[in-house]
Length: 279
Length: 279
DNA sequence: TTGCTCCTCACGTCACGTGAGGTGGC
DNA sequence: TTGCTCCTCACGTCACGTGAGGTGGC
Image 1 (cartoon, rainbow over the protein chains, first blue to last red):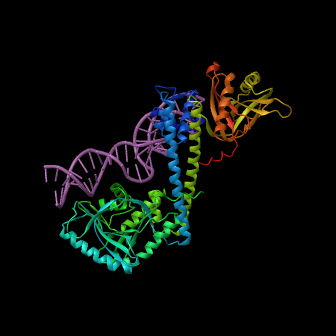
Image 2 (tube, each protein chain N blue to C red):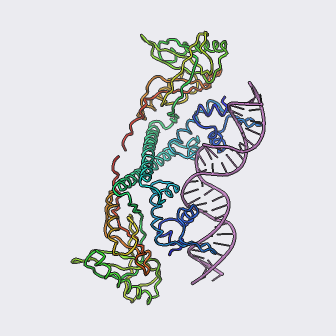
């Protein structure tokens, strides 16, 4: 016979926990005084309490613990729950290991350059239906790109107006190596919804999804975009990842004053996340 | 200029999260319509949102994120927070790795014997001040121990009564190899508080703390305790741990009917937890 | 009377998800 | 009129910790 206090001491749990387990029906005291409400426990109940403590420590919820201690649960079901927990723990460890690598990379970056606070996020990019035009540029530097992409967007805007197309998002630029010979294809695109392919000069294509894109924001004139591109590349390198192509540029803010522009760079990564560096 | 919906889509967060960040002052919209309450965001705010998302993903709380994005935080403080998170993540991973090993051990035990549900808990044992008597037994099996320990407890009880000592817990038995020659010392002890060493025949000693004890409950007569002892030993072995001595026995319930006895076995383990088997 | 143990509410935690109930422009 | 987006409460989540306010036996 134990009072709640001594039962709690023997079981290495708090009195509050015993009251909670009583409240949810997980571990009822052997008796409760009907007038004072005092709870009484028996030594034999320590077995159940120990089971609860152990399963809780493995990370099961009290609901799951209740299920597992239910006598009607079969060994097969029990195995299923253990397997599930095993998988969850593995996922948790993998996630934390990745997080740990990112924290370590941030610390290293902080040593190198205490002022850098590049926010690079890895996220999936959804596919987008776009209307687009393209042309060939001789190189990837802004001086080569800008004179090509500007007129493309101007022309495309005009054509979309004519077509009464429904622009559904900010303009997007993307790049490909030209099919034969040198130079790169510069594509200017606008997301649209519900517009048929017409005779207005532009193509309608679906930009494919990107499973894992490293994204960051560029602020200001596109003349200075190479600095942001290189910061992004360094970040990708520092995190043991690898680029899988040219980045897309999403012109989130491209008002009249180019100094206020905000452009998201989306760089596709190889599908494999970096193999965890062993600690 | 973004509505809350499009800002949420670009930032890959939910509208609810943006409202929440507004409410706690972490990310205020660029403007709110005073009559309708409609929020408006600017493209430039995506930078801050991305920072938030990234830091959150590393496991920082929103409070911490707010602190880290505060311009007045120094690189040294930032490094401190990253170091702290690094340590937390390492501890988390170690804990989960240990949990995973235990889950795996349970699964193996389930394959071997689907009926076993031995609840073995590893916990620290506090030091206890006890009054005790001891004698020598010829072996560790119940047939050798019982005839020695019974009279010891009977004598000790009587002496404590005479001494008006304050018994502060259930009786405890523990064992040691006899100083010279064979046989083992059988100690019978009662926790007491505030009783001076006297002339009543018993010793007062402090049973040392046990940093890590594997504990389980034995139900029923002590004649059958060897089965429980062996189950405990198998558990310890299966978890890659090692015993560091004889177990203590705490007689939680030792009423007149021995079939209802409940005895906790506390087996000291080597201080080093088992080295994690690599996955 | 002071201390100790016990009791029952009931709030707070953390970062939102999820209705409920209502509004404003196409 | 129907759909869509937006709004503000406000409850629920999970396993308790932590008072608040009160009782009963030494």
